[in-house]
Image 1: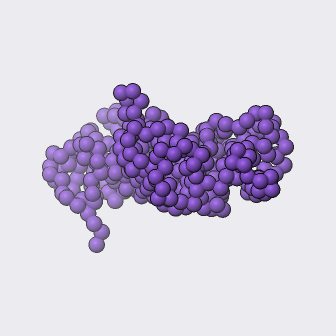
Image 2: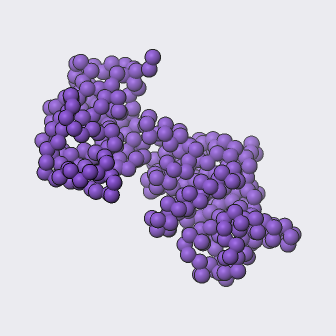
Image 3: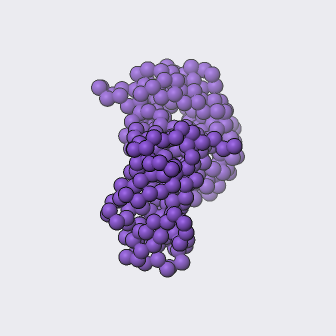
Length: 361
């Protein structure tokens, strides 16, 4: 195992700059997930770590060793691709052993490594099959097994679950988490799926347009997003964002003229300061209480035990999502009272950056 450092990574394709000075440190044994929308540069960054793309600027260190100019075979990494990349004419056993054969390992060492990896992934009965006879989940296990037998310093995963159906993705997330607990190998994992990021990562790196927006634990990013992009990218349904203007008395006026109380901030807001107020759907409270505002129910998404209720204000702006336990009592067209607890609000300035709250005493 080893730590990974990416220092000022830049990558251009023609006149397009895909990575714009990205710096990342992944601790020894850490499971770090890079997440971001399509085209943000996350796969390019991973391929650069693997040595499959040559950086335009910056450097990459693995275990303190500069590997920027080394070929993939000399970097101490193993990469699992979205497409599995298995050899169709080889058996599972031969696919898993291929890298060690190229490295001229002994037959005994190869057999032992394949056997151990197959046991970890519970694919011993599949060793004599060819990829065409395997399901998508089984092929993914074989691709992971091929990486394990190499005993790399670092695992690199490029959207490994994106080709699987929804149910299998859930089960494979558990497999990845279990595998990391067993092996403890430093892992850099790329996905566009924020659920994968939240469930698997020790730390998440949010990337947008080749720039890091925020780095932190899943809880830190969910509860303390640095900006509106991070706030809305993580969380399903995504955070509600309401346009507002600061007024006296620690309050804000919404676009429809109604007022809500704000949390205490590190620096008070001057009256007439424009801001955005964010609240997560699960934090919106429905029911009679002080400080509630009337909304009509535009639409109810029922998901078994949970419901997402879309609340419409009188100004017919964008609906506000509210998530709560579904007792079947809420109906479209009804009017309900909703409250936005001040301590659950996230405030952002005109540039979309989070405003710091008053320090707790």
